[in-house]
Image (cartoon, rainbow, N blue to C red; front, side, top):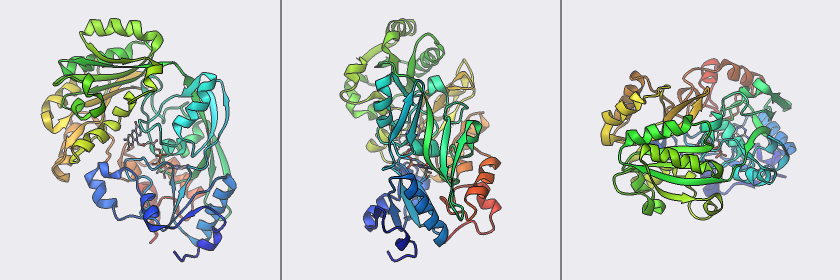
Length: 449
Ligand code: FAD
């Protein structure tokens, strides 16, 4: 590549091989047939892999001087094309900025490119762990989780990343004429939390931790999907039972979980859970009350070997299902608080085999609610939109995974604080251009190239 930015970066670790650059320009956008069509030809010109904050400042300055678009990448496991560059330019892969700087009771300071599992490896030595993690826990980085994720395993106790208290502080490199490092603390972190890297490069984070229990894993099966869902809901509300994951899969979803087949009887709904070993006895009483059957159980020690149950839940469910049937896609739904789960039941029955029910219980402002990552038998984009609209008219909230626009996904409205912050720290609109609607509407020349 011959480009004005090259001489400004030539002391850094660069990737110029077109195949590798193309690979590092992509994430898991192809789970959505809509995004696949829109994003498959998008590719960066060059990838840089800084290892220090000083190198990141150098990259930021080089981009500002040459007006080169810059898209930050963690592990590239996002689902909505968050880290796919729409306007070419530079990808900055932060996976080499990955130190755990310190751990205190309930708190850690980590560099943005640290993988979540690698962070836990260090913090667990002191009895602590990350409060919540996506099912891509083994590969995803903490910077990417904050930049593009929302919650996951652990959210049944701690809620979502957006909830106050789930992110303590961040250091951010700006894209001004003279790039600076800002430290945001308390509510200020919301300026960059879930902003797809459009308004600052996060280099370091202070994150809260939770107690690291030995987590047992179990599968409980039920004849009836709604009975399994009521069991999941009751377990979610059972404050005395310490849990990390409650994931419900209506048949035929369990048939997609190849490695677990021996524990997934034909036709049954499967509930995949992670429970603190100290809570297993009371968990057993709850199973008896609901008439479930335990088909799989591992202690925390046993769970270290073989398939991790968490890697069949959240969006890994979609991954396994698509491995069997690539025509499947998915939805992301939040159901309103309802102890009777009436809307879950209605939508489960209404769509039958076209929309397969997969629930994840989590805590929303203190209340246990089901979220769903339903599998959809995709036919056309129009039909997909019709399905989405039906959910919305019935009162379900859809965090649309078929758009790469930040505000059109889970947010539905422009976050003016984030847009104003972008105006301050990225006045030329170089960071991940084309993803933030609030900026596109405000800027006269929203797109470069
Ligand atoms: P990337 O994909 O590299 O980046 C995500 C976004 O953050 C991009 O917009 C990027 O530009 C930005 N970004 C990255 N690093 C920085 C930085 N340092 N500063 C500023 N911006 C930055 N998500 C969930 O929330 N919960 C789940 O349970 C979950 N399960 C998943 C399962 C599968 C099979 C897949 C494919 C995805 C899943 N995801 C889930 C989505 C994704 O894996 C997670 O959000 C993950 O945390 C993203 O981390 P990453 O390092 O791969 O980020």
